[in-house]
Length: 613
Image (cartoon, rainbow, N blue to C red; front, side, top):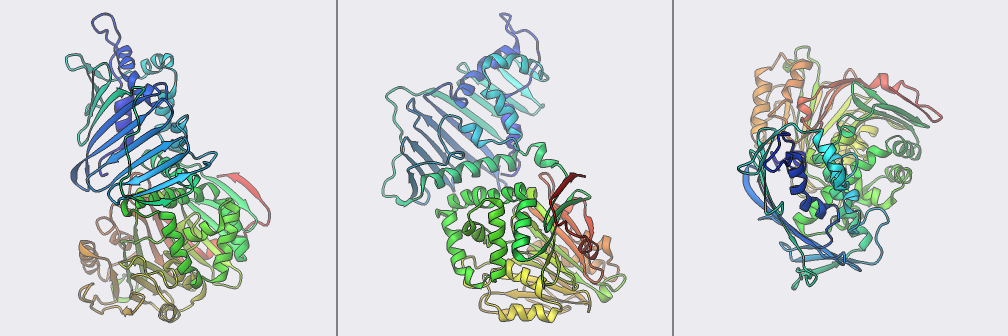
């Protein structure tokens, strides 16, 4: 939602800070604020059992002003209904004693669950907020205050008084650019910022009130109630962490961990996981050493992205994922399945679900290049890879560069994410480096998953010719573009691949989608980013070194959603990696230098030890 920032809005509407001058009648400003926040707080903390809360949010989305209406209706019986409407998307969540419905009016479909619910992740009305907001979200500290008894508010809020109050408007001023106005004894609240407004209206629901929404001729899909409620709870909870991260996510504890066949270490703030052994040993070590980080990846993909995608498409995301896996599974090597199964067991997850998550079908919008010979200052090959992915789903919280040595296979570096064994960015010990860029064709899943092909190339291929042969001889999925490079021979190639065809674009060759060829260069991107990347390569042609190659990947070649960047110098076995954080794309973050050969010489512990950096 562009400039829409949940922490700022939450703080503005719930904890506006103000001066301590007495108001007429001897009331302190802090006392008035507590009194006027009380109707909203008692709805949120469950002290008011029957109410209707309507919130209208006006906020720019994709650069255009849009309005979202959210209505919460709770009855004294504990039944409740949440409805959200925006011009393109909408949903209604209705929960009664024995049934939960999640309906999508734009798609005329409803997902209905009955029976038992998950013990931990459920939508029971009592304690809902505690399950929706974790300690890894900054919202939790404010939520804890709201859920406190009001008698505890006054001393806490008095201690944080710092802003202003306009008595004539009954308007509180926060941070100079956010105002909050109360009317009707706190039952109407207006929050105004530079680029957003929120209007709250609160009513007491009479005893005769009933839930309003009813499906008319909707297609009904039966979902287990435990699965339905778990999907929504964990999706929202992870969403709060992504859009309002606590310090625990913004500055994670840099603790080293070691288990048999695996070690986690930190290098200049980057998470490095070294794994070796059989597929089963590697999968087990991966899960043990990165258990909490893998949980963030899974929650981001399955629950937060999955819920948003269900609302967008009208299809239950997990069902789509499992259908895709059923078609892809015959093309996945048995050793990869064994590694993933061992990973699932170590993470205490369903094996089939973990297998499905590892073929997560997502389209990438990325850039890549390889320059060498006359294009570089020293003639050496530099391969840059820009991953412009959805930072909005929080994968940066689990960013990890893996150094993997599978028994009997080529060791490799894989720039990836905890819980994911495939590759989208990597380099092996034979000086082969790879990066990809997604295109169209989602749903064409009767072939080898892209990330599986990438992983196979890293652990099986010693030459560029072998990589090209692997792609030509394998059934492929969707539409993908790649840059492959070999530092031993200073060779690189661009690839355009679909299930039906494959085309290799050699250095210096022109292409209708890429423009005229550039000597000793392969340049891959799209739209204005391609134009800028070509312009930069031509401007610095013959002068490209490490620093310049990293500059080639800077904004605007990298998008705002830039999740990670990597610069490979495969002849030297060296890579430079940058990962996004919650405030900056990867291109604006520091790069860490990693020496693959040096990291491969590290002996992985044979027994479990642990310590801190």
